[in-house]
Length: 163
Image (cartoon, rainbow, N blue to C red; front, side, top):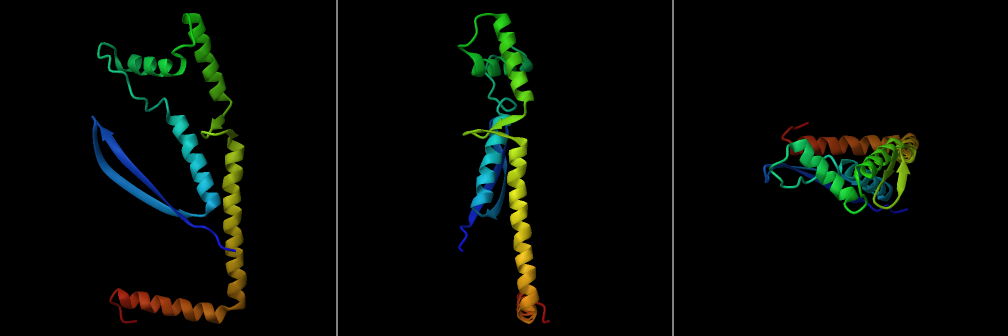
């Protein structure tokens, strides 16, 4: 069975006063299940950070917390309220919804338990792989040891060691 392998690149840029600085790339290789879980986790985290890193409106006459809060409230409820009591109810409703710990990945709502099951699936696949390696190693020990020692010698030689 052939498994598709994907290379995933994560790049982070620190944004300070409209200047980008410090690009920090990282990458990993994954199979299709890992890629699916990465996309899910990425979208869940993105949705959870939405309010924390909101682009603030440019009204310089307001202090920061007020600017941030107005921007968030407008993005959520701009056309869905008529008075302060209704807005207060909408805010309380949003708080109660968040307390249920159900997450949205951009396509569907998922629970922490479902995310944990996905992580558990990846771990079980990893355990299965190592068990297969152990079984094959026990059957072909001589081939493994000879090949591993040859690879180590070639690597050391490429580094300038003569062992």
